[in-house]
Amino acid sequence: MAASTLSPRVTRPATAGRRRAHSVDKPRRSVTLTVLTCIVLLYALVPLAWLVINSTKTQAGLFSSFGLWFDSDFALWSNIHDTLTYDNGIFLRWLLNTLLYVVVGAGGATLLATLGGYAMAKFSFPGKKAVFAVVIGAVAVPGTALAVPTFLLFSKMGLTNTPWAVILPSLISPFGLYLMWVFANDAIPTELLEAARMDGAGEVRTFFKVSAPLLAPGLVTVLLFTMVATWNNYFLPLIMLKDPHWYPLVLGLNQWNAQAATAGGQAIFNLVITGSLLTIVPLIAAFLLLQRFWQSGLAAGGVKE
Amino acid sequence: MSQAAPAVPRAADTGPVRRRRAVSARHRWTGWGFLGPFALVFALVFLAPLVYSIYLSLFRNQLVGGNSFVGLDNYTQALQDPEFWSGFGRVALFLVVQVPIMLGIALLVALAIDSGRLYGKNFFRISIFMPYAVPAVVASLLWGFMYGSRFGLVGNLNDAFGWHLPNPLAPSWILASIGNIVTWEFVGYNMLIFYAALRVIPTSLYEAAEIDGASQWRIVRHIKVPAIRGSLVIATIFSIIGSFQLFNEPSILKSLAPNSISTYFTPNLYAYSLSFSGQQYNYSATIAIVMGVITMIIAYAVQLRGMRRGN
Image 1 (cartoon, chains in turn blue, purple):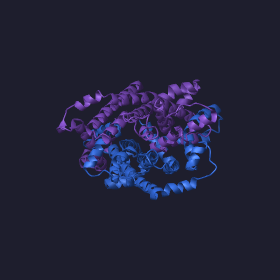
Image 2 (cartoon, one colour; image 1 turned 120 degrees about the vertical axis):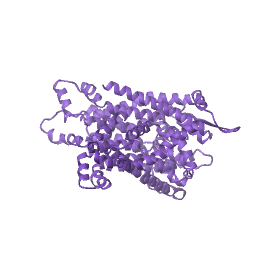
Image 3 (cartoon, chains in turn cyan, yellow; image 1 turned 135 degrees about the vertical axis):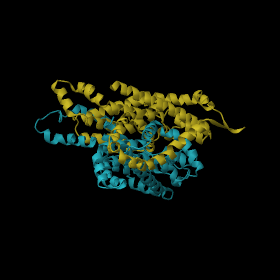
Image 4 (cartoon, chains in turn purple, cyan; image 1 turned 90 degrees about the horizontal axis):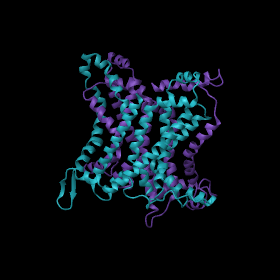
């Protein structure tokens, strides 16, 4: 759908534009507009530049040098080394925890959303209208409103302070389900499913052989967005976890930062800054590498009305 | 969001399952097989806490008498609680100021990129989106440091140029500073949603308008913006929900600006403090429910209004 209607227009200017210098497809470039948009570009990038520049400074250098330029000594490598080894390498432990939450939480959320969205799009079954109403309602309920009761419930079940307390709630993405539902509805022709059933393929086999490949762009989109949500999740682990050994990266960074404010705590701002940089690099890399997929998937979900 | 969906089940109803009734009897429950895992976890982490929090809000734990049923007393207390209303007023102000600014910038950038008049538009699109990948914790620490007087940019600028910029972490500025962080995080995300919607408007519409001599602004006002109304409504609803849930940024900035951010700065922060510092679980659940209901009512009103104007 959106993915397929999108691509012809994107590729067209290269060929059709050559005939006429300026057309609707390929209008004249505007310097003024580019400069104006550059203001927003700078707004987006300057803080990231600040982070990169300041991760090359020592703790003393942070205080003595101008924020948007490098200090005389380049301490990035020693900062990275110190970040990874501080407190017996707790940062690496946090990184592994984060990976665990992301792989199981976001991976599981994507799987559940894909299966569920497929069911909603391609089957009619008893109670479907009710499921629809409940899930749409769920998108509107503020997630944090449920945090306290979830904590109390999990603490009765003995799940708090374990990885399950973070993983289980991450498994549900109502928005992911909605996106896969819309996507499956358009990406999988019903005739194709009928044909597969005529050939005697079971439902599970049909799903994996016929439907899953068609769902791939939507699936990558949901995966990326649930990954960001899990990687960046702060509130849920904050209430669920007491033991720093189960912290994800963002909670650990916040603890390092808060350490400066406590009596007798050692200020390690250079490690907080370098750790922040290390935390965002994998996500930015994932977004850049998988652009093609998530942009078409996002188009599908955002456009539908 | 919800206005999107009614069309979806209908499309499936006309599928083969409905047409061939003999087969449909056998396949009636197949859908549940696929939906089952989601439904099961959903019930555990969503429905159960929801029911439990309603239950909690009807009880009160007192030193004398222990846990007792109090009916709607917690709700009456919440509705008369000045700390709750002060937090609510703050997020409402935030909503009214920050959301239009953020969505306005996002729409302008999306229109600029879609116009095809920019040099290097792909670079713009991906760069402006990048902050979305930055966790709220990192974004808040990053901006918090830049705001700060210790080694922040604001201090740098004051020193270098002899300016007297106000301290962004001071009580009178903190809400605006938080608004800036949230805007920075989500402007690119909303821009992409709008841009994706703009891309699927048929080019023929612009061609016709251009032949009729319509200016670019007229095309934007009368073709582009009405065509992406659905995306605008969805983005507005998500931003409203986000504003009312405001928690991460103030909670993290609290360690950098302890005097500017109270324990009841936002309703969510208040609910959190009540539970985890005050052990007042029942009252905390009540605050969360009141806030959830208000959010849903406002989101629903925006959606109705957005749909009606579309007709």
